[in-house]
Image 1: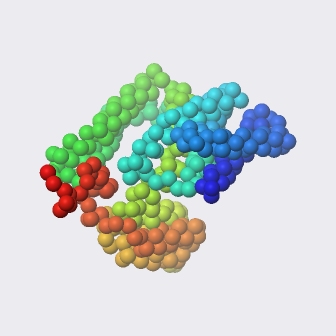
Image 2 (image 1 turned 135 degrees about the vertical axis):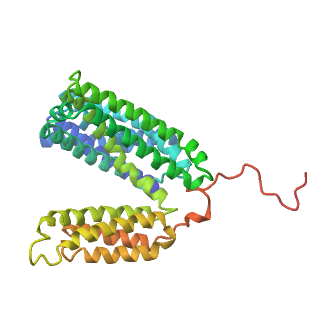
Image 3 (image 1 turned 30 degrees about the vertical axis):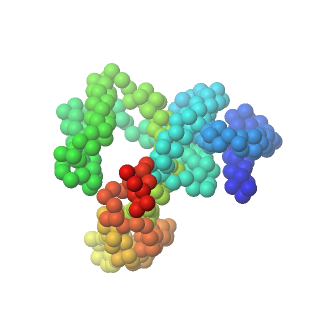
Length: 381
């Protein structure tokens, strides 16, 4: 009963905000339209939860579709697409269909493999996180595309240099993938074979990047034209990646203190921002402890990475992360205060991590259960 109430509450909130957005902004119904639209859609989604209570698969697909409708509307109605209300409606419908039949299956499969954990407020987090991330990404990509003369830069850089950079990135990515697979492989040959799929993705991506760079460089395609297609797609992908990353982090946190390490890295970024901003003043007389932000931020990043590599030392590394976060308030204002607070939280999570050690099994995920029962003394044959 409590679970159904929580699900209805999530759908009510999603319906209220989505309906208010449609009626108040897309349809331009003003405040009254937003109130009535939000109320109507909230009631409809709540009733659908009751209606599909005996059909769990249909209900889950409905929840994913409802959570993904607003991010799709933001993409379809954005200034990139320039289709107005029609684009918003089409984008919302397309996003709901993709989420209901594609994202649902992917997340469910990842959950069965132990690589993803759904929290109790999974759908409301997908809705809020996806909407905010999509909105921010759309505006950020649009601002960067307008502010930087990409076409001039691409045509001024020699094609040989662009190709070399792409090949270097592909090679570095392949080395990282093989090294990651080597953790669970006995030989480098096995690691090379097991990394076949990610290496293939890198090679295909590199080929696409080289072809696109050639088209831009020789004037066959405009960067602005390509950005109108790539910008919305990247924004929508980012809107899904950010909220879904929490589920992957929670699953990975069972083997390594990943959650605390990521939070510590985020806090370190804020500390580094302050450290880099005062870097030109470090050589001035009387600079004092202005170096603290730069050094402390780098130390926090190193400690966070070490806590992932060496989870058995999580108590020591977490304690040092807490100490470094406290020191960040000296000379770096704690990374605008928020960086130090996030670093303290990350260090505490690393130090208090109680997951299973990585050495207990040979892989990051538990082996599948045997389909045969355990042999006992009473069994024959």
